[in-house]
Length: 244
Image 1 (tube, rainbow, N blue to C red):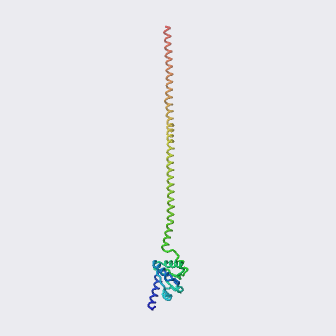
Image 2 (tube, rainbow, N blue to C red):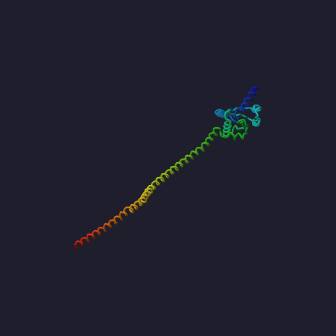
Image 3 (cartoon, one colour):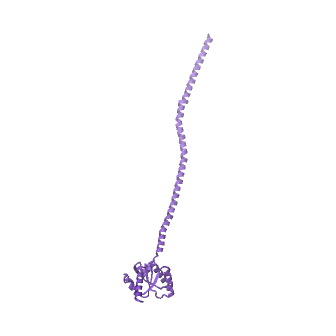
């Protein structure tokens, strides 16, 4: 490799660490050509780049990038899997591949500008993706809303039932009051009429019928006396005529 090629290689690696959202250092030892080709194909489908690098050139590339903490991991066979779109996708695919084949373990990673060792990297890559987090958040948000709608629907149904029951009760009470009140009013009117009529009848009887009755008796008595007196007078006259 010429000097210019080395400088270009160092510049290319530096660009990867500078611009990629997620860079994963892996150990590709023990992987055959067919297996690595299958993995590369899956990487391409997810816009992931895969590059085998030399540790010496990689050390030179990070020299001026404040990434000296990566140096301990630049030992043995090293390849870089990186993405300019998603910081976690490369690590997820590598971890999935490693669990299936026990090959290509992750050494370390640079995720959004922060260096993580193997243990922390595996914890991070097993976190939900952005789409998964959005889906979970939507489910979480929708769940209380759905429950609230169900509860509110139940409350509204109960409220309608209560209002209907109150309306029916009011109508029943209103109808009963009218039914009960009518006879009472009629009775009151009748009683009032009787009470009002009683004095009138009594007054009429006392002042009219009874007075008239008394007057008729007196007149009849006087008439009888007059008739008796007249008969006595006539008899006396008849007797005097006879004597003469």
